[in-house]
Length: 345
Image (cartoon, rainbow, N blue to C red; front, top):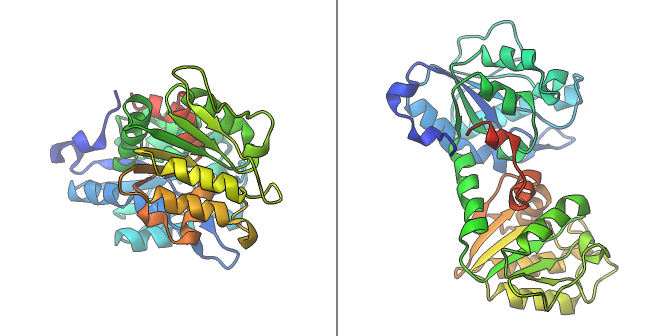
């Protein structure tokens, strides 16, 4: 059972220093702009809750990109802190170090990119203890990285009383419903290019879903084989029967997928169906997205490329639930344990 931030009362948080493991890994343009702030927007409710409960200080910690233990100026969190400050409507004191000797007295401070320190990804105990020393309470609001056993996700919660943030709790509840009690028919759409992350999901959901539609690059991989007439109790697996340069679904497959989606009561989608970055190969993703926007079905979508494609199409805000996780969502649906969630039990 996860400990939930929402179950705490004012007396539990008044004057307390909160270490908030935040989801700061957003896309920054070459011109120095935050291109996609969905993950930052998703944390707003947790900030509002903490501030309303009279916390003494919020220490925001997170990462950007993959600096691999080295300081990289293009991966500093200055732009992220500025955009997050605009979203929550509070000033954020951005620090220049991930592990400063002491913290300023500002209400909200943000540590520098945790991955500038090698101890973050190696889950170094001394690094975790240093982070924990800044606060009285730990809150995880970073579902997207909770499948990683990093210091800020599993080390710090061993030291401080720890809780799931409001968005993280929503992620767990929504995805758990898919695995345990979905409205049926349950149709799962799997796209993208990373076969190693998608095959375990297909194998696990074969025993849960009614139909699994497989597209994107993995839809043309021989390791994913169609099972249109599966054994009893397993999902039908539908792969493409035609394509456009093997970079998009063909019109016959697109029409078949759309027809199946329109019968669903629950749709789970991770991964675009074509190379959406090229206008020539966006047809199937657009058609699938429009079919998923169905008031008769609950739509759950996730993954960085999926979100990017839906934003490009102007359909992201029409989806029922958008997960902040890509790899974490896949691991959860594959039935794999997530270290960052186990740490909250």
